[in-house]
Length: 276
Ligand SMILES: NC(=O)c1ccc[n+]([C@@H]2O[C@H](COP(=O)([O-])OP(=O)(O)OC[C@H]3O[C@@H](n4cnc5c(N)ncnc54)[C@H](OP(=O)(O)O)[C@@H]3O)[C@@H](O)[C@H]2O)c1
Image (cartoon, rainbow, N blue to C red; front, side):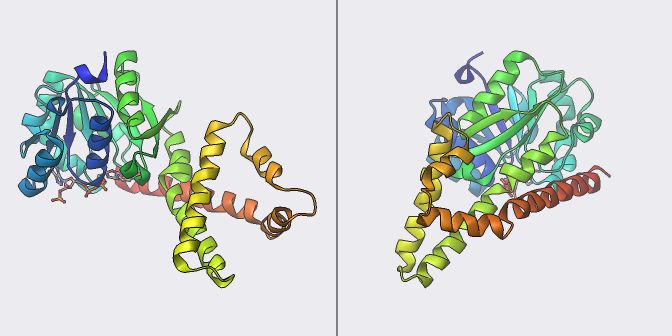
């Protein structure tokens, strides 16, 4: 089943849906295959004009011929949004993909029935520039073909990695879901320090951000672990070694682990609250 032969529907046409639709079209999916549904006619009209996709304000209409349905609304409204779609989804039996943070498969099954094929995805905001990192979890009802199709959707906006258990979505949240903010923090602090060292605001931003981008590309393009790439930049007695010693001696590795554990713990707490 090739992605271009499938009908893909988006319930909710906000930031995430726009990013994913943009990625699909950039990757050669025909806009004719894509439908977006949202209460805002203005938002839909703009999407239809810029992307050429089909639009509707009727969620049930949107799923009628869909092979993949992506639920892209806020977690707080998801139950109310999908309740009226239950019968149409049961009749069409598409694979239903939820990107709603904290909404567990058990809740989706409670709302839609046990027979629905469900994939849960934790994307991240760099999807907006087609450099996203998504963690995906599929239930047993999802066929191999459906899994491949969903993977292709998220590969269109960056990296897509399957996890073996739903619990691991908390770990995905800690690394890539919330991770963009960690790198924004690092880039911001590096840029501020560079300004204190005398660079202009714009030079500091450009140099810090490009260094993050280049380093990430090196990690993804190399067989060497990031730890080794770090060592390769550190000549003995040199400048990088001096900086890395400060980071390591002042506890950055422990701090990173502590922050990510706090993030995963909060993800577990929020899932428990949303599941009530
Ligand atoms: N890990 C991450 O960083 C991450 C990032 C982004 C998103 N997510 C998840 O992605 C989901 C979407 O986030 P987003 O940032 O794209 O939100 P968003 O921009 O607010 O988009 C949600 C869209 O759904 C629409 N909507 C509301 N009620 C609806 C209904 N009954 N039927 C159809 N559409 C309806 C909203 O319209 P109105 O504005 O008129 O209400 C809005 O256009 C969330 O569940 C979030 O948890 C995760």
